[in-house]
Length: 113
Length: 111
Image (cartoon, rainbow over all chains, first blue to last red):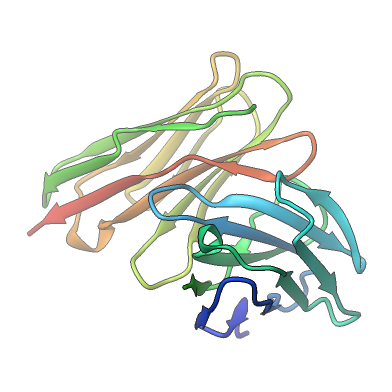
């Protein structure tokens, strides 16, 4: 079992560009959550996908969007990148909703210049 | 705005010392409290998911307690080892199911 995988590992983008990050959940998991961790902060919840639909959303602007595919993998898209979007983006997978351990991937480090 | 606070922010102990950290969270709309261990350059690793007031969980030398009425959880490490060095995160799960994380406690254990 490969666990949760994310790609790419690192990414450098310029302000105004768009970026797509990818996540494959742990085998058997059907729910994917995305988090942003800025320097010195705990991970902040962006949104959660289940059955290919956004189920929950945190306090992030519409520039942040996502998608879940039939195989439960997921993408996070960020449009019109700002310097403040520089962060570690973590993906976590789980089965169902609530009270279950979320398994995290190693993250994608995004740097916006 | 829901707030999860962890203390201390960082901790330096000697090998063999026992230590503990605190996580404070909202006492309303509680669903679960999660503890994670995050080593540098690795993925956060789930330690415990706690749901009931008074719950105590243990995994090897690490244990945790939960008080949902007053909104706090303690994580204990007995006989710290250098491999325990990591950031320990707690996360509050409310009725909506998403996790609200604290900033973490960074533990360094010196041999």
